[in-house]
Image (cartoon, rainbow, N blue to C red):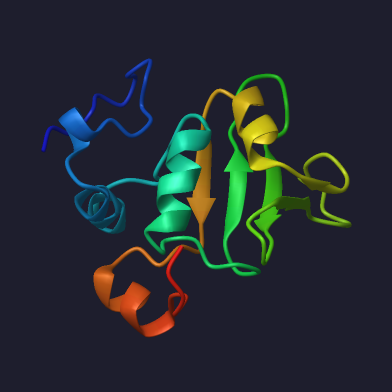
Length: 128
């Protein structure tokens, strides 16, 4: 697995560069600040593979320059809901993640089940 340069213009997850999702998340526990993804397809994969926990996981839209980041809670039906009362709240209401994740340059999942052991212990019991 190649570690991207800190000023890489495309620092979000790339399986060819970063390895499997488990390898990618493991690296962040050891060396880097936050895992980054781009677009809805990765949200769908994280959801389907049990990384995202409804009502526990958050998505942070990383604007980085000239604008506050936006934070959303992942709801029970895997929509994105603004964080009421937070200075970093996203757009008010409950939103389709396809639309929200298409807007920002990259996004960070927070409070995820990043290891197979955590997904087995705390992840959803039903198949998606």
